[in-house]
Length: 325
Image: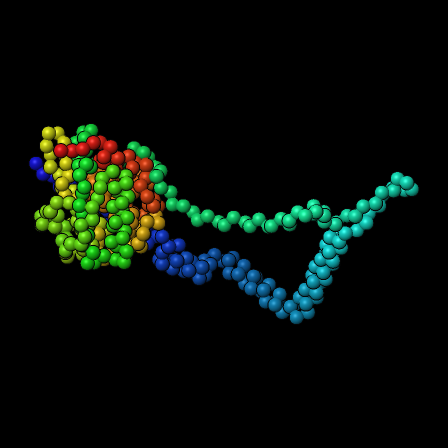
């Protein structure tokens, strides 16, 4: 028996909300500020403020100059007192033979031959890290649950994959390879890159009919897998035998019309999108914990790497569970 399952991931409306306020919100705020007050007392309050401001401006040529001169004189006297207090001075106490004098304000002499202490630079501020490896360690699920034996690849054999990069953005191939490295590290599966391909996975077609995995960027016109607002889709085909489900083919399709930042810095990135879809490709389903890469929506809070639930799920579909025939 052969089974095929796939999952889509959608970029949330919050993607636009990564900016500080949407244009519509800003417009409403401007309108609120510009709208005249509706109460009878408010206009008089506004006029009173303006009258005070105009009077202050009118008195500036004489009164303001005198006030500014007095402030400058006060600051000069304070500065002179501070300089005087900082100078070394001789202070004596007592009378006759009991009289004792000392110098106050002089710097302590440095020990003979001791180098002057270098100033300690302030530590540079550390950038705020995107949390990863956290969340609920039990927040994972499988595409093929099958009781306690979830469907998975045979981790004792290499899994070959190809990339259709004809519509890939800048850095796309590098991001796929880095995402594959992370999946392999978490599962123990050896992924082997076979190079480029012209195939585009689609339901009912031959896009993923060959062995291994195809990752492609495509448009809605080129594949029937991208539906609605889906930014990407990933999944696997598997066979069932003797109570085990073994994945034999995998696929990932990314919407080529989406503009997503490259890399793995956390938030809405191409790296997070690829890791999520590859998670489906190795047998993981969506997680209900937003701290996991396998959460069904990529948002500004998406971590830069696998969460604790992701890692536990990937271990269950990897080499830790032994070989499959």
